[in-house]
Length: 445
Image (cartoon, rainbow, N blue to C red; front, side, top):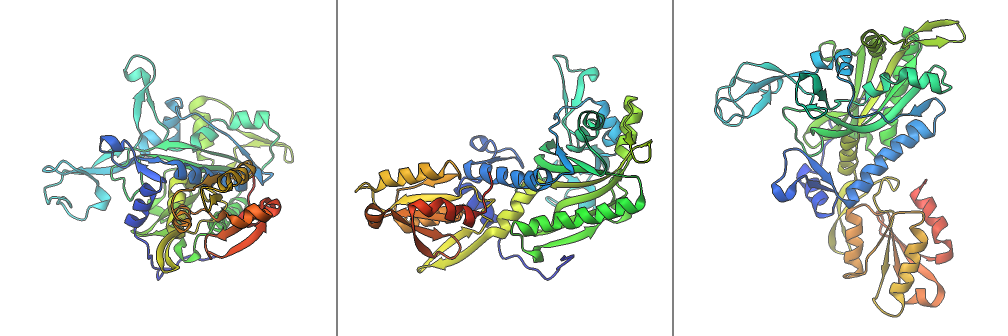
């Protein structure tokens, strides 16, 4: 496992990826027609598919392919006492300073002087700022109806612990996983979709016996497993490293945390965190709710609250890392091209079908091939422009395979299959096309 590679260099800039995302329908600025809304983003047709594929890959590997993890989907709005018990009302804060001149706000720990980094104006004294979004439930906006948008998905898992063990046949060690939206009123969001106020998480709480040896064993297991997951889907190992948290930067619930960091164009940044939460959350919710959140162990005939290992990843950050690592520029037949060399399992569109000409029955044949394949894959159809230009459009959103219907197709029912990365082309019978594509793409429904 690569722990650190400080000499790794990025050749792609964030601006290039942002421009590609807007041009090809991956990611748009939210509320674009109104001038946008700071650090909020909409996912276009290609981006929505890519994001969905990232989540499905995580769910498939973390839940569906394992016998010791089950899934959950909890509500965004939780009882306000949830956040008292979890410590978020008291501890989920950042130090905030304001510029007295330009009125911009900054995190105090990211400002090196008493002067505003934007205009040079005087900064206020630091004050604590809670990152949770506050709203109201019901028709009356008063203290009794105050509620919060969840800042993490984890608490919905902990508050459902008793429901899960009462309804499912689970035995330690076991995990409960979920994906979903979370919200944090970040003071300084930015770097495209790296840090936003609305984002999606992929989190799993893995419950183990309350033993230091058991905790350490599973903590090391999940650090390695999650590191290997990014390699599996194409991340360059030189762009990943592990960074254990220092004692003074641990979250209020953490007994120890290691981040998987990625080398973004702006430097190393958190991609995923794996934390040892102990029994903090179950202890707190048991105290605040008055409910029994213990686990009965059949082997020892005893009750206890398990300890927890939590791998927590951001969907948006993972998607950004996959985009950055996949972005390449090269020259094909004398023309420069941009190509996203995404793992085929993550690619938004798996196959593109092109009739060489708009006549001679080729479009009709191409539509037949598309209809045959789209029962199994997301398939694009394009008949506008030169065939080379059509290939380039698909390369830019990472489509692994292109199929061309031409004169020979009309004679012998064969097609040209083009590979995105090598641009090599082979001739295949339509009858064997599906089997070949399944093998190339590694596709699983």
